[in-house]
Length: 389
Image (cartoon, rainbow, N blue to C red):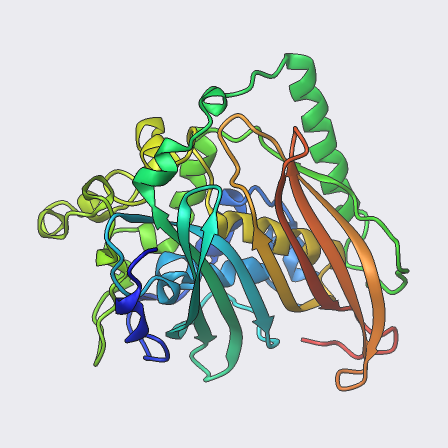
């Protein structure tokens, strides 16, 4: 069993700090869409966006996680457990209406919610801890709440259990790559066909157009990382008022620890990707050290892909209300990720006077391995509703 005694003192303790110091810029929104490989034009094309219900570029709901340090997972990684590493286990989201735009300033409230320890085949004794991040804009409006699950485990034990036959990237023929690219284009066309129209008619059992992403590479994982605002030098306020987060000293291996003293001279030493806990995403040597067979993707990106998938399908007039996303296996270099969705319920939300649709989303790789699953509830527009924004 892991010693979790230090976690107990953090449950319910408010955390401050870790906020992005500048207001959101339109290019931050564009860079996120680019990093998540999501060319939905509302999030990057000003001409298209000006004809939308919003009248200008707005961020995708998935962008919310990009307005704080550490993908919103910080509150779920409180308390010291020596020799451990961390993976994302899932995210539950509640969205309250306001969309993030250029000029917005987002501030967050955070705390460790709870934790439980279980035995896993992946790494033996493993702690699943949940933490809450609440996102508020400069108007005092509640934007969203995220309940992030962190998986904390002994890196040494996980490294012993790595399947050696997974250490090599799969190879794709030119014909296969061409087919994947054609599938991507078919997906992009599916939401462009909706354009600025309202999605009004859906039925239980309706299938969403499949979305492929990949093959994943060191370059795509690096592009994802660099779309995160907290990876920009001096972009984040680390001044904690009244409390001190333990995320950066939660018991990481020495090889996965940032150099904050050196970082006062060279900020790259606190980057995380070059030196620190995220280097395993793009460097196989460090991936194997923490129990991954090769370079692997980010849980935050998996969550973004799922939210974007639903948001793109619903179109500009739909509004995601709630999502419960569970991550089961990471994206690995060389793999292709496939998203599939199905409408599983159609109800009517009397409070908003709009249809409420529940979609079941699954994420798999080319071998059929389940990477993530989740249900997402989204409000569709009412046919007679006035302009909503």
